[in-house]
Amino acid sequence: MTRVLPLVLALAACAPKAPAVHTFTSAEAGFHTNSQWVDTGSEVVVFDAQFTPELAQELLAEIQAATDSPVRYVVITHPNPDKFNGASVFRDVGAEVVASQATAEAMPAVHAYKKAYFTSVGLFTDATYPTLPPVDTTFTDTLDIDRCDTITAVSVDVDIDH
Image (cartoon, helix red, strand yellow):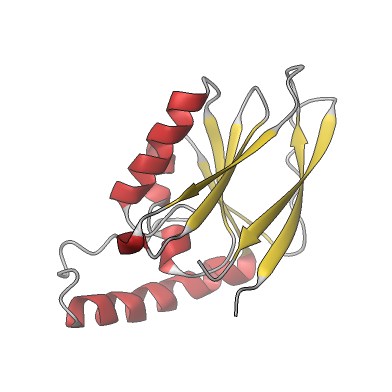
């Protein structure tokens, strides 16, 4: 069963451009994972970082081809490796990794058992499985990102099964 988690994100719209919501979907090797990204015209917020750094690089390349806005945040919606394994790619370009406190606390255990599984079936080795990315900012209920005087509400549906 597919569940959709509606997220309402208040994004600072510093530029006159209305925020645009985009979806990147990985191929089968990345479990057809959806990552959404929102371009406010002055910055980009990414939701879910993909299963591997290589797939995150593809997502980043798509973003960079579509906008000059820098990626400021990558939000991990829940503790599955297809949501957080690629986060280091975005940290490397200056993005802040954001997750709920519960997600951040669950990530190390999920990472460990998923690494054990994927290495046991031969999809990765211990050396090639993505490292657990650090989370820069956590929140317990809501997190407001207010960088300008004008706030624009954007509703983003995130497919949490893919």
